Length: 383
Ligand SMILES: NC(=O)C1=CN([C@@H]2O[C@H](COP(=O)(O)OP(=O)(O)OC[C@H]3O[C@@H](n4cnc5c(N)ncnc54)[C@H](O)[C@@H]3O)[C@@H](O)[C@H]2O)C=CC1
Ligand SMILES: O=P(O)(O)OC[C@H]1O[C@](O)(CO)[C@@H](O)[C@@H]1O
Image (cartoon, helix red, strand yellow):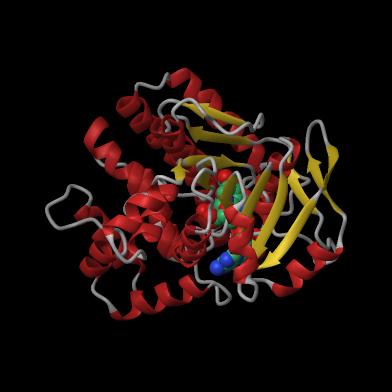
């Protein structure tokens, strides 16, 4: 069995690549980072260090690596004969990898089994987005129909904290022990790919919202409020009482919305929250607040970890989720010169009207209950 995985970064090597290897796949990593690809190509193995409770080291072998920027034809040939294609490149990058996957599908033998395509990104419907990008790039409906019949596109939810790696780590990766990879079973018609580390479910919606609106809302709240409190590392930030309080309050609101929307049990959600806060406390993970807060424009989008659950709260619980609005207020002050989106956002806050920012960045329009509270928090943050 062969898997082509786009994005040989932290999640690529430390999570998806590892689970595919353990499932028995030969993994072909594709990345645009030439140095990383050369290092992977020259190595016979790399280590994944699992840190925290039940620490252990796992070794990944039997992989190859291809530079997707310079060796596209070779990559197309790999996709043509692969069983699985996964990505962990970031949701914004999916449109760049879609065309080569399309070429790979076009090159598959007519009798080849359907290719399982799963985007492993922190976004709701990331594989749908990848599929839409792929289909948009095709010349006509006949080609779209032909290639759609050669693939199965399945949405996923991925959860494992993999911080930026130490400069001397090489291609080895340090990760937390916890992981969860949940995949929508329904597109596979009973023929799910054999990946024991993945959990196939009939309805992914509640899983991905529970994950994104708890792990990622919580993590980002710790990052933004911790950044304002002067912390640099997540485990340090969560030790600050005001940061913990802000995070617990935001997660109480997301849990209320999840419970009201999906019927999830409040006690199970409380236990889930407690476990996640403990993951953030992991003293062996040196995870910087600027990594976890990265790309604030994306994180403040309508369907992402703040505005998404805030809108659900308004709709399913009723009232205004004040703690989530306060966390958004902290995100507005995430001023990090090395983060392109932070720089762009700070410039936007200097020149744009609060109403336009709420509309265009957060996707909340005048007349919605969240509009005025968000405008107020943006106005308070403006220069
Ligand atoms: N790091 C984490 O703890 C988690 C990350 N994720 C998600 O996984 C995805 C990747 O995140 P990380 O691994 O942390 O980022 P990363 O920055 O470590 O890895 C991304 C990799 O994608 C590569 N890349 C960029 N453009 C590319 C292209 N056009 N073709 C092929 N490769 C390309 C980069 O060179 C890099 O090696 C994101 O969507 C993130 O939200 C999800 C759960 C946990
Ligand atoms: O690109 P994003 O959305 O910041 O993804 C990274 C986040 O996902 C997580 O792994 C949680 O699954 C956190 O480590 C991290 O905050």
